[in-house]
Amino acid sequence: MNQTLSSPSQWMTGLLGGSGTIAGKRVTEESAMNYTAVYAAQKVISETIASLPLPVYQRLEGGGKERAPNHYLYSVLHDQANSEMTAFTFKELMQHHILSWGNAWAEIEFDRAGRVRGLWPLNPANTWMERNEKTKKLEVITILPDGQGVRLPRGRVFHIPGLGDGLMGKSPIRMHQEAIGLGQAVEEFGARFFGNGANPGGIVEYPGRMSDEAYERFKKDIREKHSGLGKSHRIMVLEEGLKYQQTGIPPEEAQFLETRKFQLGEVARIYRVPPHMIGDLDRSTNNNIEQQSIEFVVYTMRPWLVRWEQAIKMQLISTEQKKKYFAEFLVDGLLRGDIQSRYEAYAIARQNGWLSANDIRDLENQNPLPEGQGGGEYLVNGTMIPIAKALEGGEE
Image (tube, rainbow, N blue to C red; front, side):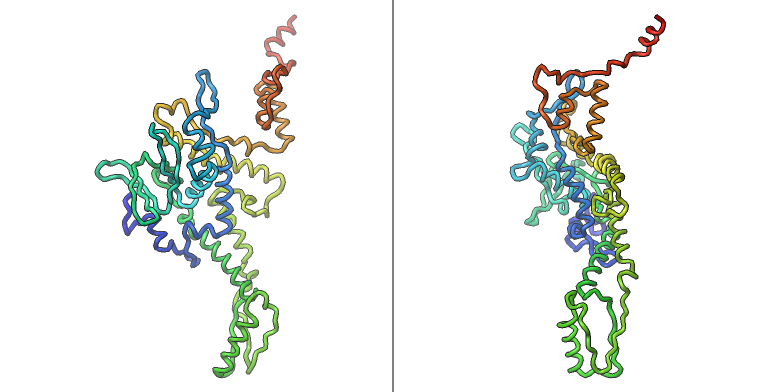
C-alpha cells in the first residue's frame, strides 16, 4: 500500500485540488459536504450513531450479560472519548470520516497500566496505513498540521475502515464523484440562473458596427440596471437597432427540477438512506415512512453498528478480556414505534411470561415498582396448558 505518483494517497490527491468530473465540478471530501444532499445523508447517519448509547457489557457465568460501568473502556465509549471531546462528538466525527474518506482513525491514549484512557481522532485526509518493509508489520502514517510525518505502530491507532480491500476503506465521495459533481453542477446552475435575473442567456444583435461610446454605455446599462434577481423584470431599452435573441434553454425545458430530484435520490442510494430522511417526500406516506424508518435501522444502521462493535472488540479490548467483555449499541429507542404499538407488544410479552412489569417500566424509562408489589414477577396466561394435560382431562 505504498503511495506513489502513479497511485497517490487521498491526502496527496486532496492537496492537488481533488478530482475533476465530466460535469465540470472538482469534487473532494470537503467540497462534497457543501452539497445539501451529501450533508443531510451524512448527518442523519452520523448523528444517529452518535446518539445511541454504547455501554460495555460483561458476560455472566450462567448466561446473559450486565453492564460493566467499572471497566476502563466504559467511560471512554459512553461518556467522554478524551479530555476535549464527548463520546457523542467523537462518534459523530469518526462516522463522518468513514462516510467521506472511507476510513476513521484515532490515536489511542494509554495509562501507565496499558489501559485505554482516551481516543484522539486523526485527520483521515492525511492518514494512511502501510506495511513496514523490514518488520512486515502494519504501521499508520499521519501528516501533522505542521507538515511533519509521524509513523505510529498499528496497536497505537484505532481504525474503522469502510468498504475497501479489507485493510483500507475507499472514499465513497471519490467513488461516486460523477454523481455528486452533477448534483453540485445543477445546484450551481440554479444559483447562477437566479443570480442573473431568472432569465436564460441570449445574444444581442446589431446590424452594423457599434461605436465604442455606445458599447460602453450598453455594458454599463446592463450591469447596473438588469443584472441580478431584483432587477429581472425591468424594461430594457435597446438603442441603435439592437435586437435581443434568446439562446439559453429555460430550466423547465432542461428538466432542471427533475434532475435535482434525481441527484437527491442518487445520494440517498449511495448512503442507503431513505429519501424522506434527506428531504425528498415525493413518494412518502404516513404508512411507508414508518416502514422505511425500520428499514433504515436494519439495513443502513445495523451494518455500521456491527462494524463499530467488532472494531472496538478487536482493537480496544485486551486479549485476556475479549471472552468476557464487549461493547454493544442500544438500538431499542430507534425501534420503539408509536405508543399503541409498544403497549400491544408489551401486553403480549407480559402475558406470555418473558417480560415482567419492571422490565417494561425499564424499557419506558420508568422506575421499578416498589418492593412487594410484584414488579419483578413473570406471569403466564392461566388458560394456557400443555396439550398432554388437555388430553388427559378429556379422557377422564
